[in-house]
Structures are given as C-alpha cells and as structure tokens.
Amino acid sequence: MIKLLFFGRLGDFATGLSTSIDAVDGLTPAAVRDGLAAGHPQLVYELSQPQVLISLNQMIVDWDHPIVDGAELAFLPPVTGG
Amino acid sequence: MIKLLFFGRLGDFATGLSTSIDAVDGLTPAAVRDGLAAGHPQLVYELSQPQVLISLNQMIVDWDHPIVDGAELAFLPPVTGG
Amino acid sequence: MISTIRIQTQDFDLAAEYQLLRQLKASVGAVVTFSGLVRDLEQQQSINSLTLQHYAGMTESLLQGIVDQAEMRWDLIGITVIHRVGKLLPSDQIVFVGVASQHRSDAFEAAQFVMDYLKTKATFWKKVDQNGQQYWVESKSSDQAARDRWSTDD
Amino acid sequence: MISTIRIQTQDFDLAAEYQLLRQLKASVGAVVTFSGLVRDLEQQQSINSLTLQHYAGMTESLLQGIVDQAEMRWDLIGITVIHRVGKLLPSDQIVFVGVASQHRSDAFEAAQFVMDYLKTKATFWKKVDQNGQQYWVESKSSDQAARDRWSTDD
Image (cartoon, rainbow over all chains, first blue to last red; front, top):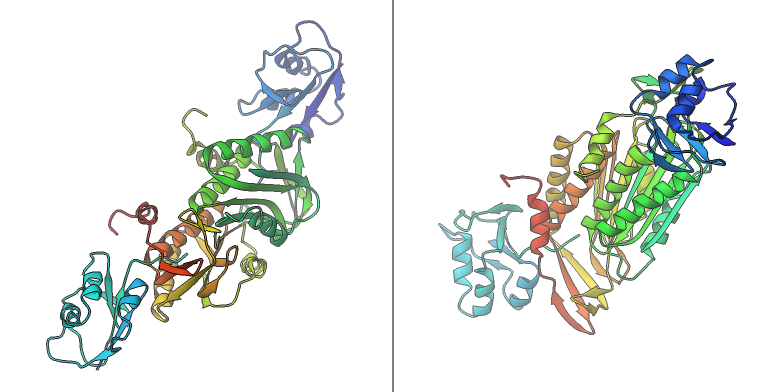
C-alpha cells in the first residue's frame, strides 16, 4: 500500500481520488502519475508542470525513484508560506 | 562669545578648560585648536588626529570654516553608539 | 546554538520570544526579529481570510535544515522560527523569525536567510478567500531570486 | 511614512514599539526589529557598566537624516529609532530600530542600513567601566566597512 498526498492547488484536482494505491514491482512516482490519468486528466496536467516536486517518506526525490511498499508519496506544488 | 564642546575621550583632556572663548575676526576651528596649545599639549595632539570631526552649530564643517560670534563649536571623536 | 521551531494554529507573542532570545547568554549583543503579517490586499483586491496548509512532519524537518544551514554560516546564539497554519485574518501574524548573536550583521543576515529559504523551501501553501472566492496563491519569482542570492550551487 | 526618533535614559518596550509599527496601516506585511544589548565582555574582559554620552540636538538631526535617506531608498511604512543614553548595565537594551513595510526585503535592508549609519554617523560615545577603570570605547573599522556597503560616494 502506498499512501498518496496532494498539497495546495493539487488537492483541489484530486478530490474524490483514493488516498492510497497498491504497491507493485518497479513502481515510480511517474508511473503513479500516469496511472491516475484515466479519470483525472486535469490532475495529470497539473502534476506534469515542471515546478511540481515529489517527496517519498518526506524526502524530495526524482520522478523515477523506486517506491517500496508502505511509502508515503506526496505531490508538492511550489510553496507559498511565510 | 564662542561656546566650546568636547565629546567622548576629548572631554577627558579638556577638563578645567574654559567652555567658551571670545569671538575674534577670522576665527576658524583650526585657530581655536591651536590657541588651546599653551596649557594642553595632549588635548591639541588628540584634536589633531585625522578622525576628529568638528561641528559648528551642529553642522559638520571643515577646519578652516569661518566662525561667527555666538556659534557653538564642538570637537567630535569617532562615534561609538549603537 | 539553541534553536526552536514551532508550527501552530495559535498566535505567537513576539515580546515573549524576544525575551527568551535576549536572555540566552550574557554575550547576546544583537537580536533581530522578523514578523510576517497578513496584508489586507492580494493582487490589489481586499481579502477576507487566508488559510495556510502545511505538510506536517516534513515542514519541521525542512525548517530544521534551514536553521542548521544558518548556524553553519553565521556566528549565532539562538534562532526561533514560528509559523502559523489554519485560517488567518488580515493583520494577523503569520510567521516569526528571531535571531540572537553577539554582533548585528550575523543576526540580520541569518534572519533574512531563514526567511528567504522558508519562503521557497518550506512546505506551506496559502489559500486566499476574496468575497467567498477561494484560490491558491501563486509562488513569486522574486522569492526565488531572494533565495538565490545566498548561493550559486543551490 | 511615519518616523519616530527618541533619545532617552529610560528603557524601551520592544513589544509596544512593535505593536505601533504593526498597526500603522493594513498594508503592513513585514516588521523587522533590531535590538542592541550591552554585552558582558569588552575586549575579553567583563564590564561593570557602560555610559553613553551624546550631543543633544545634533544626534536627533543626524538620526532624522539617516531615516530620511532610508525612506528615499526603500518602500517603507514606518521607522522607529530609539537610543538610550546614560549609565547602562550588562544585558540592558541600548538601541532599538523597527521598520514596517509591505515586503520583507525593504524592512530588512532599511533596518540594517539605519543601524550601519547610526553606528558610524550618530553622535554617541561609549565609556566602559571595568572594575572601576573607565575608558572610552574605540570605533571599529568593521562598522565603517558595514556602512560603506551602502554607497560608493559617501
């Protein structure tokens, strides 16, 4: 099981989406993104923006980083705190 | 009458000195300094240090600036506030 | 160096935070504080409220990383970073950064560094409510530029 | 812009000054404060007290001139400068500079500018008492260098 988190504006496009997916061999953040394509073209478009970062277990990683079972995968638009 | 003020470390060397002098034609801060030489060689030495500034009526001026009667002449060592 | 990092919904008390920093050591000669407040306008339009979301856990580690970098770069005695989350109103306090040091340039530069990195690295997101219309605030390129001043290899 | 300049023997209340700056306008988004404190050591020796002398009248005009320059260079909403004179003890507050602005870089830079100019231009002189031995503090070349960052024609 992989936990999925969508922050900021990405959360608006992910409403109704399952908050977890099954772990499979060779899973990467890019594959997770592409797997969401079916019902959510707008979300996939948003996730494909170059400014979007991803974190795995709260560490920033690349889109092709391997995902192991039990991980927490978060999609992070540009931050706007302060 | 010219009012004389000595600030910071200069005050220590000017103790006992009159706090005013008579106004005379063509008086300048440099002339006032040199006129103090008689009894206070250490003070004159201190006043001759390049970092010492002078103000006339609270405006920074040059050593050859003319002094008119009633003026306030202050000798200012490098400042150390804040 | 003593560092304090807090993310909280409740308001903070600048005076109390200042007193803590000031009293850390007898060698404290300078304390710089920064407070960020909710401005009345966003894109020239008045706002009703601001809602701050963050990524709990990750935000704290990122802020600690920023504070650790500041500690390596400057001679500091203490740093406090407080960031609020949840719903905020115009004029509310959002963020506090306080730095205590022996000499003023360290405190000034470290406080500005922490803010520049916080703005571009820490996982906070702002949503604005303008007359019932809600939208997420866009990040500013000026904030990226402010951060990039501090390094060439970042 | 609203400016406040005070030279006083009594202590100041950073919290009160901060609240005044914060409430100047609804567009205030950033408040930076700087506090200078009496450090316990001067030239590696512990001190008993510090006495600050100033040139009444001239100091106020010089500070006003510094604040006016800051107003021309940055987009500011308010500046407060308070400097104490007379006898001070270790850990006492000496000087306060507070700046309110819309954006943080203006407040940070203006506060640092005011301090750098105050240190090198404002007519204050410090005398230290170390175990009954009194001496005047020497000015620091690092302060001149800090000021010179802000201009090439000064």
